[in-house]
Length: 278
Ligand code: FAD
Image 1 (cartoon, rainbow, N blue to C red):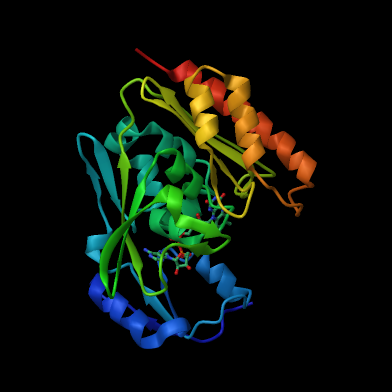
Image 2: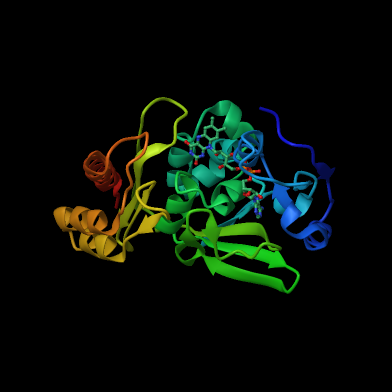
């Protein structure tokens, strides 16, 4: 199918984009890479008469590596996450996870901001951002505010972002030197969304565990991280599995998904522990 007709807008700054969202209300939506939104429009699952393209807004681009944190513009592509050497050196977990999203064609245009703003439980970046304790800056008619990734997701496709707010930047603390990391994803075939995925950080600074596509939001488990930090691998897995709530769908029944969740999490923990240095 092709999408229904819509009016295309291409503002040059965030304020103009917000003004368009205010002007057209529910009939308008921003488009970033378009690789989640356009398929929905083609299937006529989303009825929009105005698309506000963010591609021409320079302020939404760029990767800044600071001493203690990195800041990524919402329009940074998944491809850029993979190819930026300084970013991969600071937070190698980002590259490892981005390489497991879709395929190169999608990653060339799909953006970090679109992936986290979308609110699709199948997207890989939300759980990853929770594992990394990222924060999201959003800008709207009432100004700018910052929301922790761990507080952002409310239910499938529902987030703490208001309709007229635009996600502008993502800030991620740089994990301590020597922190072990791993992103493990089980999928039916190359390019598919996760049946289950796990993001793990472990090191002197503690541990953090998040899981993807096993509930209607990403699952970050404080108990699982605390257990792993205390050296209790089985306790960490048990705590994470107690927090998930998978549903039966084309990727399998509930018991299968719980099994796969345990397998990917154990693999991620083991690989992360092998990478702990110093
Ligand atoms: P868009 O599609 O442009 O936007 C998605 C939603 O976010 C829209 O509602 C839009 O209004 C909103 N939005 C976008 N940017 C902003 C912003 N800055 N502020 C506020 N709202 C915003 N993703 C995965 O994570 N894992 C996969 O395995 C995977 N496999 C895929 C396979 C295929 C074949 C395809 C087509 C896509 C796949 N994707 C996967 C999705 C892909 O990564 C998308 O690119 C990504 O989810 C959305 O990014 P986007 O830039 O394309 O956003």
